Figure 1 (cartoon, rainbow, N blue to C red):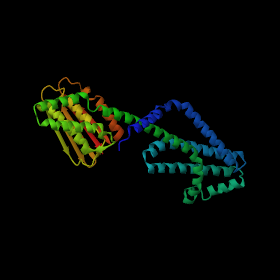
Figure 2 (spheres, helix red, strand yellow):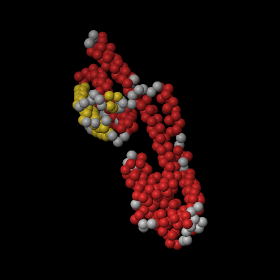
Figure 3 (tube, rainbow, N blue to C red):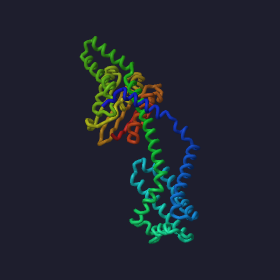
Length: 376
């Protein structure tokens, strides 16, 4: 379903406002360090108040506070700057779980050694003695037993959750902001891209060709009118969808190619082949068109004498292979082939297909060829 223009404009305004905020300028290294120091100071006070209820001995309290601060700080930075970006945010849930288990057992071992040190060197209160027995009974191997894991997991959750929750919320907000900015850029790019598809020069030539044929009472005139109207209808209306059927996209390309056949006549040999099942395959609209337009614009138009354009599309399972090659006239600068249209389509491919496509451009003396692979 196509979004209403007003809704689209409101979304653009919100996206523009959020993405226009310079978060790097606000969240400076100095502010980041200050906030981290405030967090650790707050947790130190929280741990001190909690352990003071366990035992009045300041040495025992500070030993326990140091133990928690040491394990939480080291674990926090490892989780926040390695596990979250490298595993969790990439959807590697098993890897995330395994690393979190490693961190948890790291905390258990440090806890066990600290309690053992305290029980050896200090006289403990009754409450602290009970806690020490629950940790030390059975030796260090016992901390890996399921019964103790369930018991100590509550403590670990209480200690680790505050800083990690803050980091997780901040990371999610950053990812959401980046996503909104990406959506804004995508919308702006889509609008500009669609507006530039049928340039006035092409329309003028097509209408002029149709007019010439109609004067000669050539029956092809009515067919070309249908091709042109279908091409304009698809570009202005149908192509606003996020994805269209590949078969419909190919119909649009065939309309364009047929108009170009009449325009160039026998001066350009055009070969367009399709292989595979294209009926039910989805594709981003107008993502293939710039390569074909480029082949005619910088290949056929720039050639003196006979020229050729070869277009091949193949669907094999869920992979689309698209090849466009064209002759190159003498004196044509290869950089001309990488104009605004090609740069835009590269951005669109990256936005819509990310790591699921591969584009190879091969400029040569006598021909220019692009090969595009998309996992659709």
